[in-house]
Length: 626
Image 1 (tube, rainbow, N blue to C red):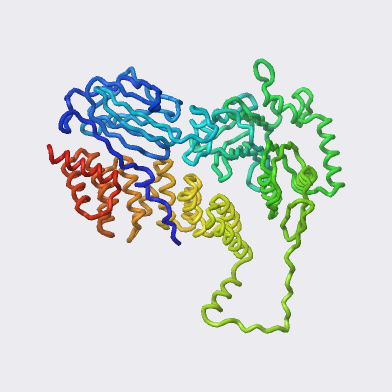
Image 2 (image 1 turned 90 degrees about the vertical axis):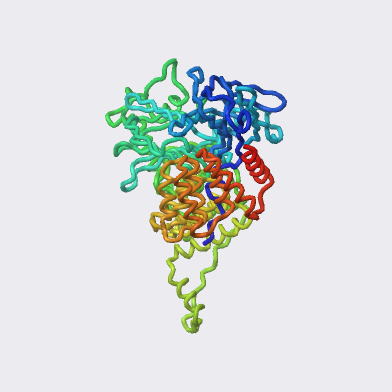
């Protein structure tokens, strides 16, 4: 299977634009160490600017990195003054944040400044006396978009989705509060409560469509409010925050939009709900709907009136024929397709929804059978459901539907099996389990969508197929490749690649996919997967180039050169390896080796991009003049 549609990390992570600013003929104008004393900001017709103030003429290099987008300034023989407080939150688009670090193991010492961007932006760098001036030129704005829409862009991922960037936990007696912090209130979310099944504890989760949460820890231990832990997952549709019970009993929960995102409050069974200072907050008011105050409850934590109402409701459901598993749901402007998908997961049914079914749903029901919930939605939205073969088909009431006719084979008809390869193919297909046959049909639909460029829809089909055929490592790798190359979903790509590795731990292709996804998210465990990808008898070109790019980006220059040497021994030198070697020699402060490599590139006969050719010729000319 060809998965090499994604670019190697060298091109995903590193930009090749390098600017050297020195006084005189390539030498520093002064041996006095440079000290960055302040960073000043300005805005004019040319764009937004950030000026690094210094005490002497700087010698520096600038380049651009991605995921997240940032411009890096490396200043040689430099330091930061105490007056410069880093990191610095800027929040003036396109500049979001500035961080600084000292590379004391370099000779000379390097002061590194990273200017993190919240949107793609062109930039120019100029030296003005002792100062370094970076000017960010705004790109083309979308129609009707404000010129300075900082709040809309500050916390966005590379794929354009807004981000939940913090989870703040407050523990109280018998309760806990969880504030999911974004750039403002989140109105579109759904809360789902699932009862205990087997070894799985009682659980509640909140789906937040359109958001991602890469900055949050994947698992957070709580031990309060009836919650043992909170887990975070980035799904195709958006972020999912999962709350697992800390005991054998369920916990009460409520969620409401807050000025900074979403506020969730949980209460252990039998515990009193804490009262917020200054009166009940929106979450407390919402929780009041789920039960009476502690003084009105009996020993089981439930009032007599509530218990009687539950018993009466259970009897009424039984008499009406609604006897499926009970569920508690809280939908707020939730897409209908996501609602039906949830019902299918809870009920264990295949759900088929006609394309004509559209709209959103706001609904809150507690402890009702899921088939009752489904009928409520059918009546609210004017829909019909047809159930057969463990499948529920949902469509508009005025639209007909016919189930495929069941074909009964005629016993007296003798069919001679095909011979040769055709016979083997038919035998193999007939020997497949029914779930695999069904998965293959779904995969074909996903392939068709992918050919049309509908990658999100294709990924959803592949996920359905993988659910039916979970040990299909090739499908998991296909999904990882699509997430990397077509969708930019690094976390999802890593998850799918790890699924493939769980089936075949030594698969270099899956290891490379996991490594690239992790490297794009700047996770240190990426190295382990890169090493798995290249430590095989004949590693791929992509694996070697990507690993070298990763090592270079992490300042492991000797390791990067060794990986490039391995590439050359297997496949001969290429333009990518020669440019990488020259760039690394420059970073190692070995100008003679860098210039020799640049000259080799000019004489190699490779077609060079105009900007690259211009830079190399200027670099060589500067060296010849020295």
